[in-house]
Length: 73
Image (cartoon, rainbow, N blue to C red; front, side, top):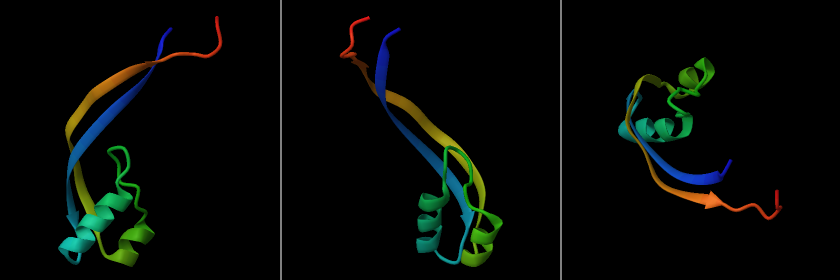
């Protein structure tokens, strides 16, 4: 079966409680995983924030390229 490398972009709208806009942006970038909140309760308490909702808004593959094997089958 052929093997491919696919370039993928994803966008989300994240609702977060934080002390200020800068913290909201920073913690969203740092703690957001693959549509899940990677922060622990300790992180939330230490930095005073809470991610409320993660809404996927875009999930589009925009490029695929077949990967040629150097080894003959």
